[in-house]
Length: 127
Image (cartoon, rainbow, N blue to C red; front, side):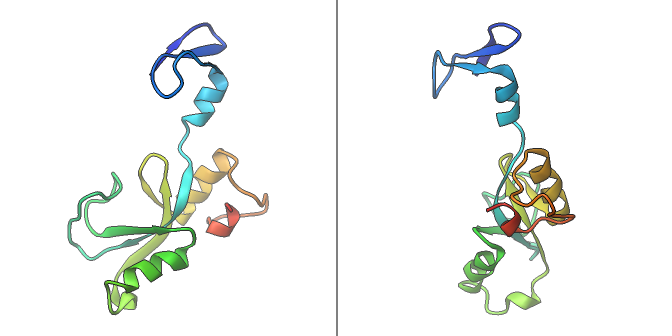
C-alpha cells in the first residue's frame, strides 16, 4: 500500500519497507506484468485448484525451460504426447500466456536479452 507524497515520489506505508521513498515512475514500472518462467498448459478438461487466474480447466506446469515442464508431467502421465497442450509462460499477475503474448509482455518491460528476438517468446530470450 502506498500514498502519493508528491508528484515524483511515493511514500511506502505498508510492508515490506515502511517509510521508504521510491520514485513514482519506478513504482509504476515495477507494477507492470512480467514473465516469471516457462509453462505448459495441459488441457485434459478437468478442474484443478491453484491454477493461474485465467485457467478454468486443465493444469499448468512450470519450469526454468519448457523441457522441465514436460519432465514434471511425465512423472504422472504415461503418454504426454496424447494430451492437448499449449506452450507459454506464467506471469507476475498469475496468468498463463501463450508465446505470442509472452513476447509482447517481455518486450514491453525490457526482459529480452536479445533485441532480435521474436515474434514468439522462448525462455532462452529471457535468461
